[in-house]
Length: 310
Image (tube, rainbow, N blue to C red):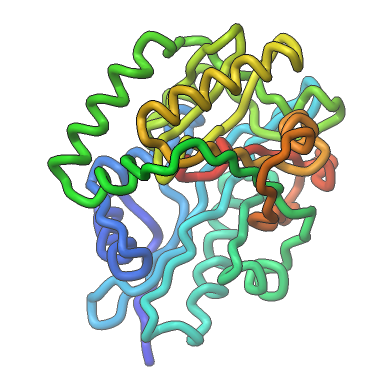
């Protein structure tokens, strides 16, 4: 079986919509795919490769450049994501072939290393086929907030979803702030993680996340199947408890069923959440592949907000 391989471009990027729909069941817009892969704020954009069979797009493997920081040093790395193949074409080596071609493309552009959150379907491939190194597994925490799943019900129909979104916008408007979070993982010192400035947050806004201030605490949040916490910035543990209670109250009053935190182990978030009497779970693996980085990549620490779709 012969496949045609193309680099991701401004012309063929619309073909990703077809692959998203078949593989993930997600209907995404032109704006979503353009904004997700347009990282021109870093001077680079559109990394990845598509596979076609009889002119039909059937697989994709892509990466997104992101500035990383270790102490006062920065490097441009890339986060892999959206490794997608039509079910009837799996097992034909496309994951590996497209990944290796994208590795070469990234190295030619001066990318220092790649990293990501392989899921249960791709973890074996990244580690055994693309030579990634496993770091650790993200830790997750769930706080039950409402027994009436208003959000889940509202999301099922376009009209009610729009009404619910408008309502949430009004609820959170008084809490929203233009302040940015530098990254709670850096509280530990000597950490490699994402370098976040205003341009980074502008780029990430394609995924409908925002920052709120509650009880002097900053929470980077997204509401999708729960209230997701991308990261936090807090003046003290006591204030965090007050801020968290405020979030719980908002979620409960508005039919958001749960609050979900995810972070690398041994970070501020995990230390705070392990003191709570709540559900804990292991999440995605964290892995990397070093091209030419001087950073200690075994010290890579991340939060939920670093997910490519957060």
